[in-house]
Length: 117
Image 1 (cartoon, rainbow, N blue to C red):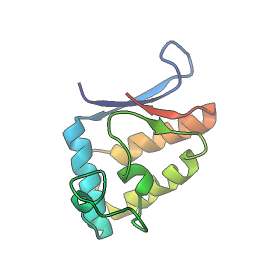
Image 2: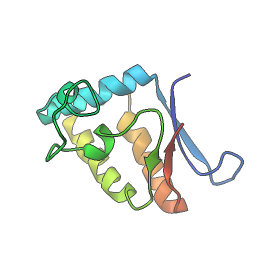
Image 3: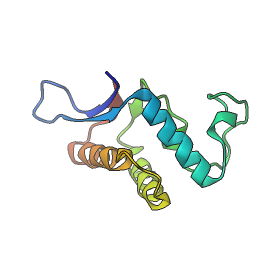
Image 4: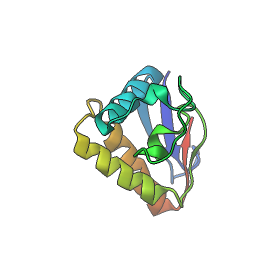
C-alpha cells in the first residue's frame, strides 16, 4: 500500500506506473523540499497553516493532493521543470524526483495526463 502514480489506462500497452512509497515518505519529501527552498510547508494553506500560496517555488508538486487528482498534459512541462529544479536542491533520498520525471516524459510521449491513485 502507498502512493502510486500512473500515466494511461491499466489494461493498455500505453501504461506507465511508479510506486512513490508510503504517503508519509512523500509528505516528508515535500517538507524537505519546502525547507530547502526557504519556507515551511506546514505554514501553508492546505496543510497545517493558513498562509496563502503566492510566490513560493514548486507549487505544482507541493500544493497538490498526495492521494488523488493529477496533472494535465498541459501542466507536465512546468512540472518537469520543477522536478529538475528540485533535483538541484539535492534533497531526494528516495528518487521521488526521478520517478516523477519518468512519468512526465511518458505523459508527454503518450499525450496523457498523470494521475495519482
